[in-house]
Every structure is written in structure tokens, then in C-alpha cells.
Amino acid sequence: MVNKLSRGKLLAVLFCLSLIVFYLIFLHYISPSREAVQSPESTNTVTSPSKVGNTDEADKYISLLEMILNDCRIDFQKRLPELSVILKYRFAIAIIVESPFGDVLVPANSSKLLVHVEKTNGSTFLVEFTLKFDEAVLLENHSMVLLPQSISTRKAILQYVPGKGYYLPNGKYLGNFFPMFEVENLQASFIYAKKGEWPTLDNDLKTLRLEKVDTVIADLKNKIIVSRLGNTSTILSPANETLGSRIVAYLENISKTSLPVRRLTSCPSIYAVEHYQSSEAPVMLLTINLPTGIPTFLYSTGCPRIIPSTKVTWNNQEQDYYLHSPLACLLGIRSLDFAVELENIYP
Image (tube, rainbow, N blue to C red; front, side):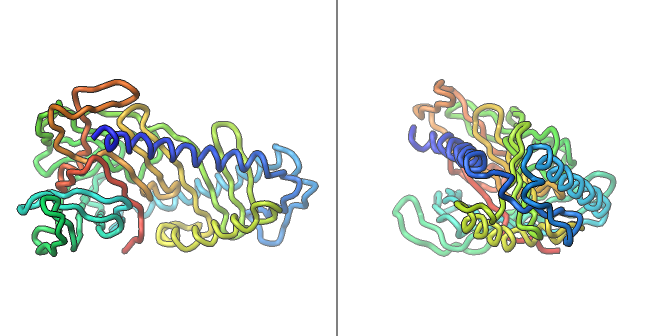
């Protein structure tokens, strides 16, 4: 159990290390003087290599991209009043789900989370979360079973107010566990329960800040990747002699996988995300698409049953409690953690 409980910490470390490695590759390999940087405002003007040989020129290019993103955000905000979409996510790691037959293990990539978002009035959205899976493994005897739809489909209908969070139909506040349509002052809420206690929606909530790790912008039209970590900005393009093929592969992959969310904006050739992590334990990792505020990746704790003898360690300190995701509790996800990644968007 100790090893399982540390998986979230390990994922966070790997998440941050991947960002750091990507950033170090930027600094080590990229010399702006070797890049032919094309202006995002014009397809006919290409900045010559000699003119991009200083940080000021790189910052100017990044500023242009950010101006475009700001226009995209304004455009998307205008569309929010009539917004009605279904966001389709896949569970990237295996999850344990409760059922009348006992807890079942649903393999990675074989379950879906559908998030149906519909604007109601003012700044309020009606959000329906649906967990869907077919085959699962009974943990009691490790046999594969096909569960009826009434069991393999779970729904939770909530009201959502950006900047505040989610509410049950009876008005009960559940905090903000799945941020949408916002990219500032992000927070994550968890259900507090002592070891041995059953986590319920009536338990106290603990809210943590989500801190921005970095911003990554892909200019798909001009085949440029921009990274901003703190006050340092870097540009990467296929012209790089060492990483050119990898950059091309990355851009091609992003071009395909990000198409659903880019279609919602007025700048479909720009794909930008911000990576966030929780300010303290437990680990929460979040990737938000910048123009829309739609989450493209989320890693969080589940809603497990923690027995008194379980050793819970966060930040090298043993705890007598566990923090559970309200979403996981609503859907009956009893694994220690879960991760979802955006697959598609339906109007």
C-alpha cells in the first residue's frame, strides 16, 4: 500500500522532470540565430536568421502569439452563452470501481469519462459527468466480467460556476475539482476523511492552489513551438539540426490530437496549453487549453477506502487522513488515483 500511495508522487516527479528536460533541451540545443521564424500575423514575411539572434526578437514573436491567443479567448468567451458540448476523455491508467458484485478493476484506456456541458443562465453551467466502461476484472477472483449498462454507466449531474466550483442540485457545494473555462487563480478541492472513515460528500473540503508550471504554444501554421517557464521564453522549430525530426513528429501529433479543441476557437492554427500542479500534497496535475479553458489532462486522487492500518505518507510525513476527489466519490472510483486525457469534443 505504501508503494501504491507513492504512485501519485512519482507521477508528479515524472511530470515535472519531463517539463524540465524539455526546457533544458530548448536551452542547450536552440540558437535563435539558426531559426527562420515566420511572423504569425503574415504568411509572406519570414524573419531572416540574422534578425532572430537575440532574446528581444524571440520575446517579440512570443508577444505576437500571446496577442493572438488573447483574441481567441475573447472570441470564445462570446460563444460561451450558447455553449453546449460533450467532452470525451479516456482514463489513461487503470481504475477500481465499486459494483454490486464487489470492486472491479477496469484496465487503462478501456473506460471513458463524458462531460456534457450546457450553458443555463448567467454564469452557470449544467454539467453531467458520465463514467462508461464495458469489461472489468472482479478483484475477488480476478475473473473478467461483462457488467450490465445499469452498473457500468455512472452519472452525476451538477451545476458549475467558473471561479467558484460545483454544486449538487440541492445546493451542496463540492468545491472545484474539474476546472473549466478559467485559466487564472485555479484551485482544487478534496474531501477530507480520517483513515478508517468512509469519505462522503458531507465531509469537510480542503482546497489547494494550483500553481502554473509552464506555458507551451504550438504555432502549427509556421511550425514553431514556444515555451515559457517563469520569465524565460524559448523558441523551437524543425530547422534545429539535432531535434528537427522530433519536433516535426511532435507538431504532427499535436495537429491531429488537438483538432477538436482548436475548432472551438477563431485561431485554429494555434494550440496553447498551461501545465499546473497542486501547491502541496496530494498531487494534482492539470493541463488547460489556453483559449478555451478546457482541461486536456487531469491527474488526481480517487476515492478509496483507507483502512486504519494503511500508511499514508505525503512529503515524507505520515498522515492520519486522506484527501479524496469529489468527482471520484460521485462516480464510485475507489482506486487511489485516476488520470483522464481529452480525446474528442462533440457539439
